[in-house]
Length: 429
Image (cartoon, rainbow, N blue to C red; front, side):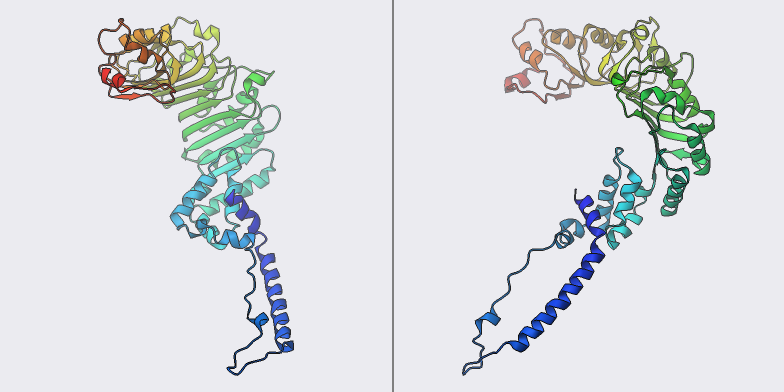
């Protein structure tokens, strides 16, 4: 990567500059001696006939430092360079503070631009493997770079066993995290999913802090783990009650207690989780507007419950490869969008019949289910069939459908398909 090359070569600039100065002095001395020892002959017009001294020297190829100095990125204005720096430091898989510091070591101009880009200094990555005084110095350094304290915080709990609660308590108090009025992003990256319950601790609670996003991730996929410790997401929401968006990634054996009321959470995202019991507690999110469940296995005991899941504020539902998802138990009177490319089944057909107000649908429909699906959603306005258009193509020759399907559709998406789509198909819709 260009930025990595720039950083590596920047630390060699002083040594290369000294070396070039020393070489130029030596070359000048050699040229002076050569001029004194050479004999020149001139003809009647006074023009030198010594071709050897008139020949142009062969130019040397540019050094790596010279090539980088002439790179187009060096001609970018400050706004474009700041945007590049922000993208370079926003990767959640790297230590973002270290990358921001690297940008200040490339050259004087890059340092000036980096220091004038506040976005670089609002992120605070905490690795509990570092000594606590070192982490405190890093916090003070970030605060000195930006008038406001960092509000994008990631805690990497790489220690074995449960997260080091005394370390978290120290950081919350010494670094002033407990006094922040708002945190745009708070993320915990665990060694394994069985340690998630250790995050919920009264000493690190933020009862008055608004948190826009709370992520709980794990280094280990739960399907590969042999240790599973059941825990309740309610503990997290009691520790951080003002969370707007909560994302649970690579977790296992968690559940929601029924009967609670989480008023502030509007977006719940669950990805790559196994053996989760969420059906009974989804009704606790009374103001939830967006629900995203992907590549997740819901426990059979939770899915077999006969209790209706009422979600009055839900407007956007994304389900993709969610095993045992309780389609027939959902009651979402405000739902407008169903997405996730889930294969249409009898359960989804019953769900769509119960929710005729859904106007935007993204699903996979095979040719066996196409006729039933088309009769179920005549009200759809935006339909994304992806590459699954076999049923739509076969509809032209079937007698099962008398009227054209989807009479109210305004936007039809047919991408990722290898079949030829003729004009007669579009005319018949």
